Length: 349
Image 1: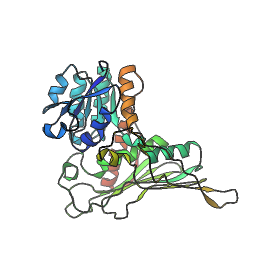
Image 2: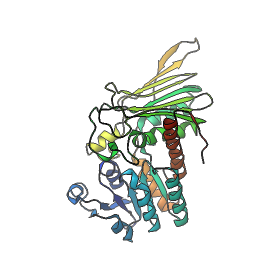
Image 3: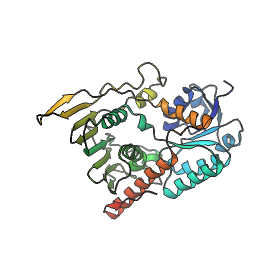
Image 4: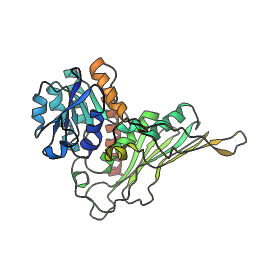
C-alpha cells in the first residue's frame, strides 16, 4: 500500500530472521523494504520483495526508508542507531539497548534532537506467561508479593562458536537474557532499592558469562533473576509467592518456537500457551487450594503494531527508550555488584 511505512532491517541473524523480519512483514501498515545482509540468498526465499544490500549506509541514505531496525551484534547497536537517527530515520533497537548507560543516554538525546521515535525490542513484555502474571497481580490474586523467581535456564553444555559466547563487549547471558528478565520486573514493580548479582563462567571453555543469579531488593519483595547453561531440568519459568497465594509456571512462551518454525505471526492459535501455570490461593480457613490460572495468549505482533502507530500518529511507542535506559542501569549495577562482590544501591536516572 502507498501509505505503508518502509522498514530497513539491519542484520539477518537469529534476531533479524526469526523475530524482526516475520513480525514486520506480518504487520499491516509496515513493509519490509530493505534487509542489510551479506547473504542475499538467505533472505530471498522468505522475503522476495525486500531489497538486500550489504552496507547499512545504503539504508540510511535511502529516502524511501522510514524506520530502521537494528538487529546486529550488541556492540554495534549504539553506533548504528545514532547513524540512523542522524539520517532522519525512526529506530528500533534489539535488546540490549546499548552496552552501557552513556550509550543509551546518547541515543535518547539524538532521538530527541532529531524528533524521531526510538524504541527497544523488549518483546517479552508480550509473552503469554508474563501477561498472565500481570493479570493475576492486577486483580490481587496473590496478595502482597514477597518473592518472585524468574528463570530462563537452558542445558547447553557445549560452548557454541558465536559472538554471543565469545569474550567481548556485550556478550554473555547477562546481556542476552538479563534485559528481558530485568525489564519484566521493572514493568511489574518499578525500580528496586538495590541490586546484588553473581555472574559466572561455568562451562568448560566458556569465554563469556553463562550463569547469573541476581537479586533485586525492594522494601518487602525480593525478585530473583536466574539463568544458567548447565540446567538439564530447566522447566521452571516463574515462581511467585504472596500473602494471598502462589503462581507456578513451567515452560517457555511458545512464540519463539512458532517463529522458528515459520508460522505466520498472529495466525490462528497464535501465542496459545499449552501450560498456563498453576495458581494456588490461600483460603479463608488458612489452607491453600488450586484455582484457575488465566490463559492469556502471547502477542509479539503487538510490538510492531504499536511502533507503526507511534510513527504514524504520535501514539506512545511500544517500549519507551527511557524505560530501556533504566534496564541498562540495572544491567550496569549487576556488573558492578558481581565485580565488587557486594550489593549496589540503585538510584535510577
